[in-house]
Image (tube, rainbow, N blue to C red; front, side, top):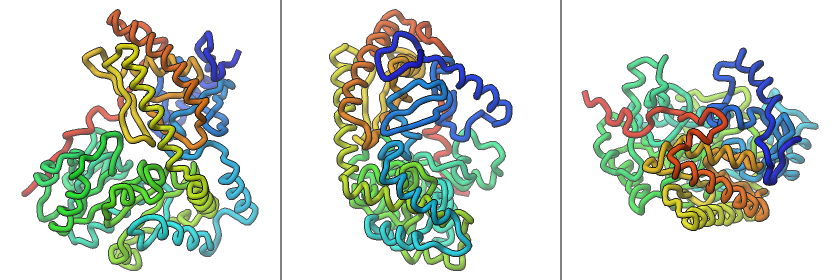
Length: 444
């Protein structure tokens, strides 16, 4: 019998998922196109591996099991699955065509819309993925400043300039590795210690889960102005989620360049590079950044419809309202159960559940909660990527499931045997080391 969004007696049957995995992993390295969607991020043997359908805030796997989804395609679905207004815009454009031999009017219409709502979006360019536009921003910064080094904070994609600062940097020449370095969030001293005369830009995610202190973002702006460094906001997570105008609107701090993707088109593939006109003007001749599918019309139609939907329905505020309820209810539940080793933190639109290592292995504790939530019809990866489509009833049910799952975790922790409660292989870390890594530029 297929599991549903209810207090199921058994773990979901995932026979078809496993069959597909066997076929796919034979041909696809790592078996997945997106690392955060792969089996390594879920309890292998319990969690589904393939989803077939989504509607609103719910999904169905290939075996027919139904779940409330708190991952939302790892961020892009800020509104939800199969939103009629967005899908109808795509269908209408599909009748006229997808990609054309000349430019399409939507390129202009969406650029005007972006210019209107995003502070400092004096110029606009499109591509397909977040890594495309962050890399274009880095190239622009180097061209504009005449300098080469990059300071980064957060995750910025798979391209050489960034991934060289992680422990997955094989295949990247040492000369490139010596041009990018990390700074620590909320740590201005790590910024000052890392700056030399050859730093072209500082690129950061304005926030992930940790709240910015009062000084960090404004002081970055001041330091960049003082040192002739460009400030770049990577807004894959903040854009169209924390505010319609993104982090620049939220923090009231200007970025020289800002990049967007994920939530901008509710699931369609598009990324956007915006910024100062004098910097972006280098794209006219000096800096090359062109793609065949940059003007693909279905994604532009979805972008326009998504922004219009957000404006009309005050979607950003509604997402924040629901996310705040989830955060507060989780922490209240943990306190009620006497579980001071777990908490929910982050900005209202996107929160994370934390597990204190003092109580046990955090990945094992996360895995056990995930396992029990999936059994009860909640697809959960440790985060709450809150969607507009998530209902208050969904949230109420989620906390029925949470209470049962946390009681199981509490018992396992008290017995010192969390791993013994797992029915499959626990989740894995994506990177083995991401902080205090490759910190200071080589000053030679």
